[in-house]
Amino acid sequence: MRRSRTRAERHGRLAEWLAVWRLRLAGYRILGRRVRTPVGELDIVARRHQVVAVVEVKARGDLAAAAESITPRQRRRIGRAAEAFLAQHPDRARLTLCFDAILAVPWRLPRHLVDAWRA
Image (cartoon, rainbow, N blue to C red; front, top):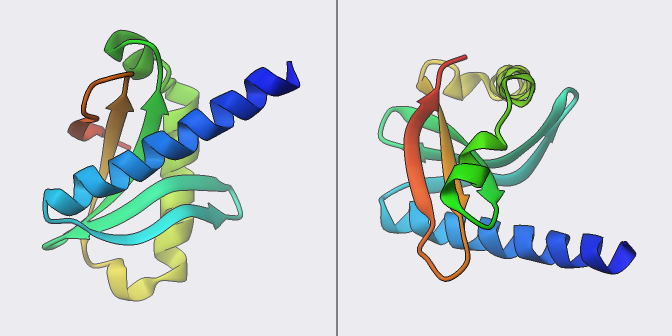
């Protein structure tokens, strides 16, 4: 079990690294990775123009499984963590908040879903 957990952790870190590069190539500036807040962790926080994107990265065997793995409960937690992040950075509070997802599957480029859900 421990070996599979370590493999999953490595796979997740690789997916986040690919996601960061996917965002950079699309013109986003990365504000933070694995951002810790009192209510949870945000995978990636990025900015493009007047939008702050909170990006959840999911690595699964196929796109459908990756998309389905972002549950309503997790979306609420991410929303609370995003609010806490903005409270810690009041200069960014005037910007538009957007919740994106990047889905990573083996042997394909990561798929970026802009404005994947609303808080």
